[in-house]
Structure formats: C-alpha cells, structure tokens
Length: 310
Image: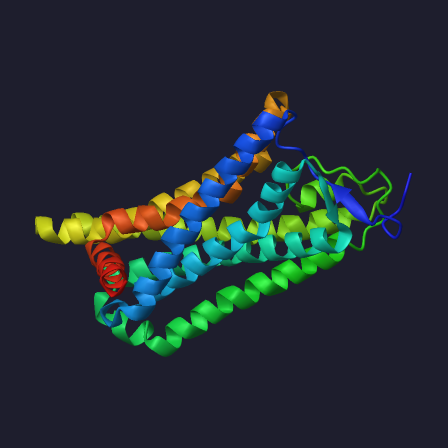
C-alpha cells in the first residue's frame, strides 16, 4: 500500500512481452509518428505559406493540424522509448505532464472540429453572412476560445486527478497516462468529484456532437437544393472530409470508453487505445487533402519548390 506522496513513478502497460515484438512495435510507432509529422507539417506549411489559403476553413484546418501534431508527440515518444529499451516506468511529473498535454490537445481538437462545422454551416447555409460573421478577427477569437476552453478543462481535470490519494499501487493499465487508469489507483471517495467533472465535460462534448449532427442535417438539405452538379461537388468536397474526421474521432473515443465490460481484454483495450490516440492525428490530414483540390495543389507546390531549391 502506498499513497500519492510516496509514488515517484508509474508503470505503464507494456506493448509486448517478447523482444522481437517490442522492436516491431517500436518500428510501427516510429512509422506512424513520422507519417503524422510529415503530413501535418506539410499542411501547416502549405496553409501558412499559401496566401490564397488564408481563409477561415484553412485557418481552422491549420489549428487542427497543430493539435494533431502535438497530441501524437505527447504519447508516442515515451511508448517508443519503452519499447526500444524494454522499460515500463514513467516519472510522476512525467505522467502529470503527459496527461495534461494529451488532454489539452484532444479537448482543443474537438472544440476545433465543432468550430469547423460552424464554418461549413455558414458557408453553405448562410453564404451572404459568411464574410461578415467569419472575418479574420472573428476566426482568431474562435480559435483562441477553443484553445482557452481546452486549457481550462485540462487544468481542472489534471489538478483534481493528481490531488487524489493513491494507494492501489502504481501500475497503469494503459501505455500512456490517462485519467480512468489513475482513478483506479485511488483509495478515497474523492474520486467521485473527478467523475462529476468528467460527467460535466461529457455533457458539453455531447452538446457539441448534437450541434454537429444538427448542422450537417441542415447542410445536406441545403446542398440537395443546389441545382448544379459542380455546386454539389464543391460542397461535398469541403464537408465530407470534416464529417469523416469527426466520425473517426468520436467513434474511436466512444467505443474505447463506453464498450461493454463483457468484451474487455487487455489486447483489445490496447488496440483501441492506439486507434483513438494515434490513428486520427495521422489520418486527418490525408482525409482533408484527398478531397480538397486547393490543398493538394498547395502541398504539391510546396514539395516541388523545396525539391527544386535542393
């Protein structure tokens, strides 16, 4: 038995038991992280350098790429280090920092996805008001609000979680630090306070999800009234990538945390954790770039220009 004041490190869940599988996991994690760094970095550079992409949609996409890039850099490096050197430990302060930044970037991502839905709704359903309601100042304020709300939400959860007394050891059933695993180590009824905060955050997240669903119902009704096939294609090319990213983000998170205990297994839990923490940051840029001709052209010009200079 121990308490939180005496815990100096936590033990993370090992990705594999044999040395061969550990090295294989290291290579897979390295490939995923490099892919995420490459595609997100290309989008950030293309939007920042392409003046014709300085529109609300691409401004929010740049913020989304930043959150994806940072979230995968929060969890993957430590998992790679543990797989390569056959270790499991993470320091108490390191666990605190990892939980803080991962929750921060995940919260910011969902807020940004909600704002991007509002952008698409205004663009298609209220085009005459789009320029006035989504000017550069308004976009900056909305992005700042997304990051600020994520920070406040993160501070509350992180401070409350690590203020709990821990007396059920220091082994976490996850390959990175997350709130549910730390709550399992608590030996006090104080964890109910954190569960209350989680319930409040879940309700706010559900409200955002309902707004996204309602907005897309209105968007698709408006699109179906567009007479030209070109108009259909242009509307769907901007809406479908966002809808696919939202679906990937929400479905993996919901299935990970709300799956039935009867189908629980360590290997399934690990696979789902990798799915929702690593796959969306790597796939989001690809989903957007495959359907958006402007973004593909900007990325291609960026790559060819860099190649010609070198």
